[in-house]
Every structure is written in structure tokens, then in C-alpha cells.
Amino acid sequence: MAIANILLVDDEVPFVDTMIKRLTKRNMDVLPAYGGEEALKKLAENKRVEVVILDVKMPGMDGLETLKEIKKAFPLVEVIMLTGHATVESAIDGMKLGAFDYLMKPSDIDVLVEKVTDAAAAKRRHEEKIIEAQMRKITTRGR
Image 1 (tube, rainbow, N blue to C red):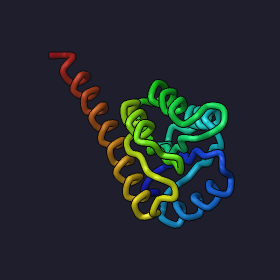
Image 2 (image 1 turned 90 degrees about the vertical axis):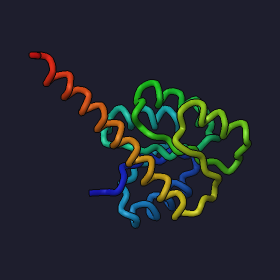
Image 3 (image 1 turned 120 degrees about the vertical axis):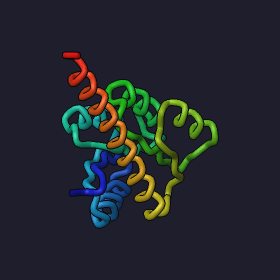
Image 4 (image 1 turned 135 degrees about the vertical axis):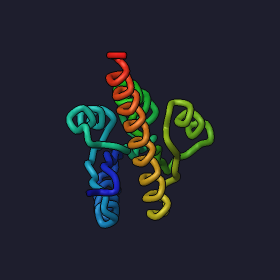
């Protein structure tokens, strides 16, 4: 089993290709998307995605807009914002909108892997809590 199921969203094709190779070597399943709209479509089609690595600066739907839509439609999916154009404001905005974390491009691969691993674990914990609550609800109905 993979350490994490990732959707990597960035408009720079060479960056996506390189990151897929580097993350796959570290036992992660990675789906590519090259823009916000494509990311939302892939999330709808693939329920296994646990973590989205999302570029902030993209043409069309930018990273912050995409983050808002992801959190609206897929609230348990964790999002790590990634940018080469980071500002304190965009980092704060991303965290306010529910991003799990924020990294500068180029980021150290080991730091990214650690953050992805933590984010996937957080998503799994949230899912377990929801299942436990549903089970409690079912088992206490007849009482």
C-alpha cells in the first residue's frame, strides 16, 4: 500500500513530471493535474486521493480559488500549498481557507514527503472518527 495517494496540481509540466518520479520512488501514488478545473474533476473521479499538492500561481483558476472549491466539495482531503512566488499574505490566506501546510518551491523532497505523510495520516484520523461516530449512532439506536 502506498504511503499516500496524492493529486499533484501545477501548470508547469516539467515540474509535475519530475515530482511524480521523485514521489513515486518514495512509495506514493501520484495523479497529475495541470490546473484547478482539472484537479476538481480528478478529485470527483478518484475518491482515493488523500492529499493535494497545489501550486498557488496558475493561469485560470489559481491555487487559492482551487483550495476553496476543494474544501467545499471534499472537506476531508488535505491540501499542501506549493509556490515559488510565496508571500506571507498568500500563505496566511491558504491556511485560513483550510490548507494543511504551505511550502516554498523548490522544496526539499524529504520535507515535502514528511508533510504529505502527516497530511495523509490526518485525513485517515478524520475518516476513522467519522466512522466511529456513525457506528456509535447505529449501535445506540435500539436503546
